[in-house]
Image 1: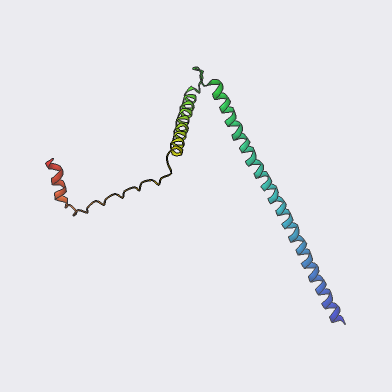
Image 2 (image 1 turned 90 degrees about the horizontal axis):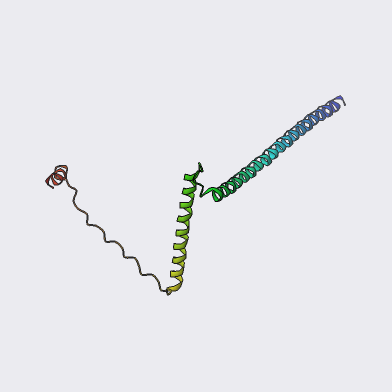
Length: 139
């Protein structure tokens, strides 16, 4: 029976060792998962805070523009003028779009005329180097 008891003890030791290793692996995986989840949550918070900063910066700039766009003494006068010009271009483009929509809705629903294909240019023989220079010098 010493053989069986020896085998039983070695098997128990091996299983205990395997169980300890499994527990250690589980704890390591759990900790890594916890850290990864926390890092992901922090990164999401950073993205949200950056979006808030962008939104508030745009709001601040918009309020500043509205308040000081006509102030001649403002150090940001040039930028305000550029913004005003951009607003004017936007308005003109929106007006053109509205006009195009208006014209499109008043026309009949006929199919547009096909666009004619351009005629291919005839292929000429390549001009040799001396002839090319000769043409430019005679003019």
